Length: 105
Image 1 (cartoon, rainbow, N blue to C red):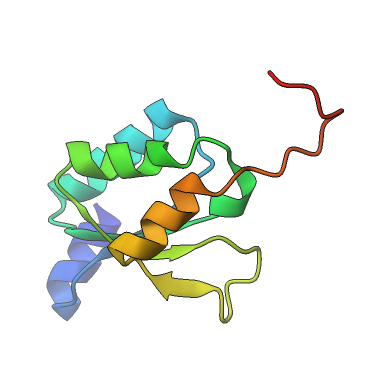
Image 2 (image 1 turned 180 degrees about the vertical axis):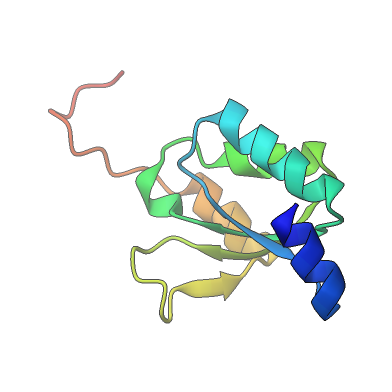
């Protein structure tokens, strides 16, 4: 409610900044809540921390929300990039560096 009030009072477009490593159910709830406020775009961060990179894309799709920018680095300054189709596809296809014992799950 506070975000909706601030957005209405100031007249700015709200943009959701969401970490890609959240549990899908929590992510979908958060995205749906912001979509109900009129949020149309999102910035997804922390792609470097999750092997389930498509989850955030699916949550945004379900809410008809566009992915504006992405970050796949722990350093937000200089780490956000425009979410072009090529960049998102490359990020989804990039292997996840698993720091475990190296055995397949």
